[in-house]
Length: 315
Ligand SMILES: Nc1nc2c(c(=O)[nH]1)N[C@H]1C(S)=C(S)[C@@H](COP(=O)(O)O)O[C@H]1N2
Ligand SMILES: [Mo]
Image 1: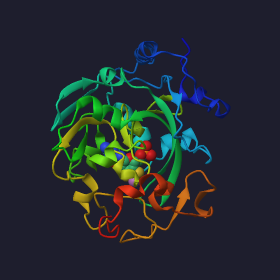
Image 2: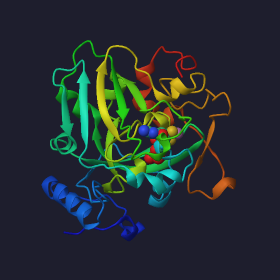
Image 3: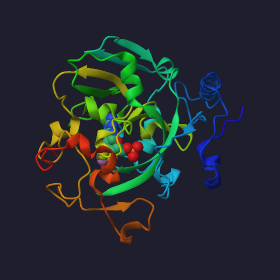
Image 4: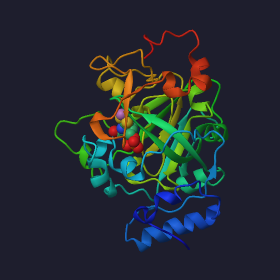
């Protein structure tokens, strides 16, 4: 069994990995790696059996694995960009259960393995943009959230999907503070049509391997036309609800962060412009900023979801 750690992967090998392990082998490999590495409860970085997705945008240069895994936002492990990489190893990502509940015909507590069993993992290269004006191009490994939604059969009354991150103060040093930075657990939400859109995925890996903890292991949301904070990490609960759910950053600063959070260069954040962005890894602070695109460049695919809506009002 060939199992390598991230540090052993050469940039030249960062090509789509064909399916060379079947799912049972992957699970065994992942469990074996956790044991071998002496990381109780962690899957470590095991190769994932992912096919290349036709939805991948391959024209842009990938951000390096180093940058993607060391420049993170994950406030449960601290508020600066370096903390998640330094501290998130304490999160136990195995065993992992995702509760599916609310307005749904098949509510259940799904073991992560069972959740993944029927899905086909795909590698998808998505641009990710943070609200503070930086972006990365990340080769995610995941599957459409729509696949999971269809399996659990939401009721007609379900209009939104709500997500919740694990809240474990013992394993999350950033939550165990006298003045909490956020109202834990971290929560997010999508309208049902956004959740069903083929570009919306649940990611379990990047660069062909299981997700590092700092990027939201073992399973996180990726919505490429929205600001980064919509991409909730380390999900333990997915609920189908009738009313628009609360979202962490909207609760924290409603004037700065809306429910929709669609990338939009013409709607400024109250404290800074959203018109341009800095691509992480491109020549530091003096690199030329690039213009930010409406819906992060995915307007052709998603603009119709918001037809007739005032995007300045529904920001
Ligand atoms: N649970 C949780 N999810 C989270 C966050 C967080 O602090 N906690 N930060 C969000 C923000 S602001 C961004 S930009 C992305 C960053 O994802 P990355 O570190 O994988 O690039 O995660 C999002 N998901
Ligand atoms: Mo962000």
